[in-house]
Image 1 (tube, rainbow, N blue to C red):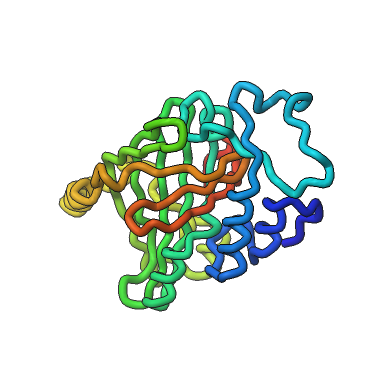
Image 2: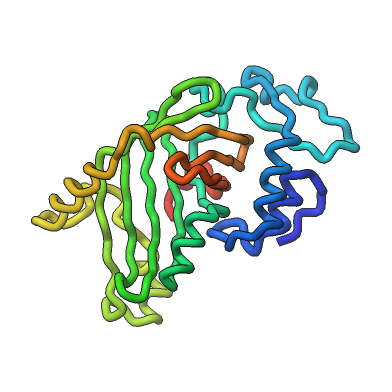
Amino acid sequence: LQVHEMTDKNEFLNSLDIINSLNKASKERTMLLQKLIDNKINIPWNKWDNDDENVIDSQSKSSKSLDTPGLQEAFQIVSQGTWKVIYAPHMTTIAGLFGGSFDVQYTLNSNGTMESHARYHFPIVGKGFLSVSGTYSSVDANVSRVDFDKAWVKAISNNDYSNEEATSTGKDNQPYMSLDEVPNGFLKDFINALGNTFFIEQFSVFPVSYLDDDLIVFVFPLLGTRICAMKIHSTEKKNI
Protein backbone atom coordinates (compact mmCIF):
# COMPACT_ATOMS: atom_id res chain seq x y z
CA LEU A 1 0.00 0.00 0.00
CA GLN A 2 1.26 3.47 -0.88
CA VAL A 3 -0.76 6.63 -0.28
CA HIS A 4 1.21 9.56 -1.64
CA GLU A 5 -0.20 12.60 0.18
CA MET A 6 1.97 12.43 3.28
CA THR A 7 -0.36 13.32 6.13
CA ASP A 8 -0.09 11.62 9.51
CA LYS A 9 -3.03 9.44 8.54
CA ASN A 10 -1.51 8.34 5.27
CA GLU A 11 1.88 7.80 6.87
CA PHE A 12 0.24 5.30 9.21
CA LEU A 13 -1.69 3.65 6.36
CA ASN A 14 1.50 3.41 4.27
CA SER A 15 3.12 1.43 7.08
CA LEU A 16 0.49 -1.32 6.79
CA ASP A 17 0.68 -4.37 4.54
CA ILE A 18 -3.03 -4.20 3.67
CA ILE A 19 -5.90 -1.83 4.50
CA ASN A 20 -8.85 -4.22 4.38
CA SER A 21 -7.64 -6.79 6.89
CA LEU A 22 -5.81 -7.11 10.19
CA ASN A 23 -2.11 -6.23 10.20
CA LYS A 24 0.63 -7.46 12.52
CA ALA A 25 1.59 -5.14 15.35
CA SER A 26 4.91 -3.32 15.32
CA LYS A 27 6.53 -0.50 17.30
CA GLU A 28 6.63 1.66 14.18
CA ARG A 29 2.92 1.24 13.45
CA THR A 30 1.92 1.87 17.06
CA MET A 31 4.09 4.99 17.10
CA LEU A 32 2.56 6.30 13.85
CA LEU A 33 -0.95 5.66 15.15
CA GLN A 34 -0.14 7.62 18.31
CA LYS A 35 1.30 10.41 16.17
CA LEU A 36 -1.95 10.56 14.18
CA ILE A 37 -3.91 10.99 17.41
CA ASP A 38 -1.53 13.48 19.01
CA ASN A 39 -1.41 15.77 15.96
CA LYS A 40 -5.05 15.58 14.85
CA ILE A 41 -7.00 18.76 14.15
CA ASN A 42 -10.44 18.63 15.78
CA ILE A 43 -13.38 19.81 13.67
CA PRO A 44 -16.84 20.44 15.21
CA TRP A 45 -19.43 18.02 13.87
CA ASN A 46 -21.68 20.83 12.58
CA LYS A 47 -18.81 22.13 10.42
CA TRP A 48 -17.52 18.75 9.25
CA ASP A 49 -18.80 19.07 5.68
CA ASN A 50 -17.97 22.76 5.35
CA ASP A 51 -14.74 22.75 3.34
CA ASP A 52 -14.42 26.53 3.51
CA GLU A 53 -14.13 26.42 7.30
CA ASN A 54 -12.05 23.24 7.48
CA VAL A 55 -9.03 24.35 5.49
CA ILE A 56 -5.77 22.93 6.86
CA ASP A 57 -2.41 24.52 6.08
CA SER A 58 -0.98 22.77 3.03
CA GLN A 59 2.32 22.33 4.89
CA SER A 60 0.65 20.57 7.82
CA LYS A 61 0.75 16.78 8.11
CA SER A 62 -2.08 16.75 10.66
CA SER A 63 -5.36 15.00 9.80
CA LYS A 64 -8.91 16.11 10.55
CA SER A 65 -10.92 14.33 13.23
CA LEU A 66 -14.40 14.94 14.56
CA ASP A 67 -14.11 17.02 17.72
CA THR A 68 -16.69 15.09 19.75
CA PRO A 69 -16.61 11.57 18.25
CA GLY A 70 -18.67 10.03 21.05
CA LEU A 71 -21.75 12.19 20.39
CA GLN A 72 -24.49 10.74 18.23
CA GLU A 73 -24.74 14.01 16.29
CA ALA A 74 -21.08 13.61 15.37
CA PHE A 75 -20.60 9.91 14.68
CA GLN A 76 -23.86 9.54 12.73
CA ILE A 77 -22.29 11.72 10.02
CA VAL A 78 -19.69 9.06 9.19
CA SER A 79 -20.56 5.84 11.04
CA GLN A 80 -22.99 4.07 8.72
CA GLY A 81 -21.42 1.29 6.68
CA THR A 82 -19.09 -1.66 7.05
CA TRP A 83 -15.81 -1.25 8.91
CA LYS A 84 -12.83 -3.62 8.97
CA VAL A 85 -10.37 -3.81 11.86
CA ILE A 86 -6.93 -3.13 10.36
CA TYR A 87 -4.76 -2.71 13.46
CA ALA A 88 -5.27 -4.23 16.90
CA PRO A 89 -2.09 -5.36 18.67
CA HIS A 90 -3.92 -7.49 21.24
CA MET A 91 -5.72 -9.46 18.50
CA THR A 92 -2.58 -10.25 16.51
CA THR A 93 -0.66 -11.07 19.69
CA ILE A 94 -3.29 -13.57 20.85
CA ALA A 95 -3.59 -15.05 17.36
CA GLY A 96 0.17 -15.43 17.11
CA LEU A 97 0.44 -17.18 20.47
CA PHE A 98 -1.97 -19.87 19.30
CA GLY A 99 -0.80 -20.05 15.69
CA GLY A 100 -4.05 -18.71 14.28
CA SER A 101 -5.64 -15.63 12.76
CA PHE A 102 -8.55 -13.22 13.14
CA ASP A 103 -10.35 -11.01 10.64
CA VAL A 104 -12.94 -8.71 12.19
CA GLN A 105 -15.53 -6.42 10.70
CA TYR A 106 -18.67 -4.69 11.88
CA THR A 107 -21.58 -3.01 10.15
CA LEU A 108 -23.27 0.06 11.64
CA ASN A 109 -26.82 0.68 10.44
CA SER A 110 -28.72 3.97 10.27
CA ASN A 111 -31.25 2.84 12.89
CA GLY A 112 -28.59 2.36 15.58
CA THR A 113 -28.28 -1.41 15.20
CA MET A 114 -25.05 -3.19 14.37
CA GLU A 115 -23.60 -6.60 13.50
CA SER A 116 -20.06 -7.85 14.01
CA HIS A 117 -18.43 -10.88 12.40
CA ALA A 118 -15.03 -12.24 13.45
CA ARG A 119 -13.53 -14.82 11.14
CA TYR A 120 -11.21 -17.16 13.06
CA HIS A 121 -8.79 -19.87 11.99
CA PHE A 122 -6.88 -21.82 14.65
CA PRO A 123 -5.17 -25.23 14.52
CA ILE A 124 -7.25 -26.90 17.26
CA VAL A 125 -10.52 -24.94 17.12
CA GLY A 126 -10.70 -24.91 13.34
CA LYS A 127 -12.19 -22.10 11.30
CA GLY A 128 -15.46 -20.25 11.15
CA PHE A 129 -17.22 -17.06 12.19
CA LEU A 130 -18.15 -15.72 15.61
CA SER A 131 -20.93 -13.14 15.21
CA VAL A 132 -22.81 -10.77 17.50
CA SER A 133 -25.46 -8.12 17.03
CA GLY A 134 -26.97 -5.31 19.07
CA THR A 135 -27.00 -1.51 19.17
CA TYR A 136 -24.51 1.37 19.31
CA SER A 137 -25.02 4.71 21.03
CA SER A 138 -23.38 7.64 22.84
CA VAL A 139 -22.10 7.91 26.41
CA ASP A 140 -20.56 11.36 26.25
CA ALA A 141 -18.58 13.63 23.91
CA ASN A 142 -15.67 11.22 23.61
CA VAL A 143 -17.09 7.82 24.52
CA SER A 144 -19.38 5.46 22.60
CA ARG A 145 -20.96 2.23 23.72
CA VAL A 146 -22.21 -0.99 22.18
CA ASP A 147 -24.84 -3.28 23.65
CA PHE A 148 -24.79 -6.76 22.13
CA ASP A 149 -27.74 -9.05 22.81
CA LYS A 150 -27.36 -11.88 20.28
CA ALA A 151 -24.46 -14.23 19.51
CA TRP A 152 -24.00 -17.06 17.04
CA VAL A 153 -21.30 -19.15 15.38
CA LYS A 154 -20.81 -20.62 11.94
CA ALA A 155 -18.18 -23.34 12.03
CA ILE A 156 -16.59 -24.25 8.71
CA SER A 157 -15.27 -27.76 8.15
CA ASN A 158 -12.35 -28.31 5.81
CA ASN A 159 -14.45 -31.02 4.22
CA ASP A 160 -17.53 -28.86 3.62
CA TYR A 161 -16.39 -27.56 0.27
CA SER A 162 -13.58 -28.19 -2.12
CA ASN A 163 -11.19 -25.28 -2.56
CA GLU A 164 -12.50 -24.77 -6.06
CA GLU A 165 -16.13 -24.62 -4.97
CA ALA A 166 -15.38 -22.40 -2.00
CA THR A 167 -13.58 -19.96 -4.25
CA SER A 168 -16.26 -19.92 -6.93
CA THR A 169 -19.32 -19.74 -4.67
CA GLY A 170 -17.93 -17.73 -1.78
CA LYS A 171 -19.73 -20.01 0.70
CA ASP A 172 -16.56 -20.44 2.72
CA ASN A 173 -16.24 -16.68 3.17
CA GLN A 174 -19.69 -15.77 4.48
CA PRO A 175 -21.01 -15.87 8.05
CA TYR A 176 -24.66 -16.17 8.94
CA MET A 177 -25.62 -12.52 8.67
CA SER A 178 -28.12 -12.69 11.55
CA LEU A 179 -29.23 -15.06 14.30
CA ASP A 180 -32.37 -15.79 12.29
CA GLU A 181 -30.25 -17.43 9.57
CA VAL A 182 -28.78 -19.97 11.99
CA PRO A 183 -30.46 -23.40 11.83
CA ASN A 184 -32.72 -23.96 14.83
CA GLY A 185 -31.53 -26.33 17.50
CA PHE A 186 -29.89 -26.73 20.89
CA LEU A 187 -26.51 -25.40 19.72
CA LYS A 188 -28.04 -22.16 18.43
CA ASP A 189 -29.79 -21.49 21.75
CA PHE A 190 -26.77 -22.55 23.81
CA ILE A 191 -24.30 -20.29 22.00
CA ASN A 192 -26.67 -17.33 22.16
CA ALA A 193 -27.17 -17.83 25.89
CA LEU A 194 -23.45 -18.35 26.48
CA GLY A 195 -22.63 -15.22 24.48
CA ASN A 196 -24.94 -13.13 26.62
CA THR A 197 -23.01 -14.09 29.75
CA PHE A 198 -19.92 -12.42 28.24
CA PHE A 199 -21.67 -9.14 27.38
CA ILE A 200 -20.36 -7.21 30.40
CA GLU A 201 -21.53 -3.62 30.69
CA GLN A 202 -18.22 -2.33 32.07
CA PHE A 203 -16.48 -3.44 28.89
CA SER A 204 -19.14 -2.03 26.55
CA VAL A 205 -17.86 1.56 26.53
CA PHE A 206 -15.18 2.66 24.09
CA PRO A 207 -13.30 5.99 24.30
CA VAL A 208 -12.78 7.25 20.74
CA SER A 209 -9.37 8.76 20.01
CA TYR A 210 -9.86 9.61 16.32
CA LEU A 211 -12.75 9.57 13.83
CA ASP A 212 -13.08 10.80 10.28
CA ASP A 213 -15.00 9.71 7.16
CA ASP A 214 -13.32 6.32 6.88
CA LEU A 215 -11.01 5.75 9.85
CA ILE A 216 -11.63 5.28 13.56
CA VAL A 217 -9.31 4.66 16.50
CA PHE A 218 -10.82 3.63 19.82
CA VAL A 219 -9.67 2.09 23.09
CA PHE A 220 -10.49 -1.50 24.04
CA PRO A 221 -11.11 -0.98 27.79
CA LEU A 222 -10.53 -4.56 28.94
CA LEU A 223 -6.84 -4.46 27.93
CA GLY A 224 -6.32 -0.74 27.48
CA THR A 225 -5.11 -1.16 23.90
CA ARG A 226 -6.20 0.70 20.79
CA ILE A 227 -8.14 -0.67 17.83
CA CYS A 228 -8.08 0.97 14.41
CA ALA A 229 -10.75 0.23 11.80
CA MET A 230 -11.30 1.45 8.26
CA LYS A 231 -14.62 1.82 6.45
CA ILE A 232 -14.62 -0.49 3.45
CA HIS A 233 -18.23 -0.12 2.26
CA SER A 234 -20.93 2.48 2.54
CA THR A 235 -24.36 1.57 3.95
CA GLU A 236 -25.54 0.58 0.48
CA LYS A 237 -22.82 -2.11 0.27
CA LYS A 238 -22.93 -3.87 3.59
CA ASN A 239 -22.24 -7.44 2.44
CA ILE A 240 -18.77 -8.86 2.89
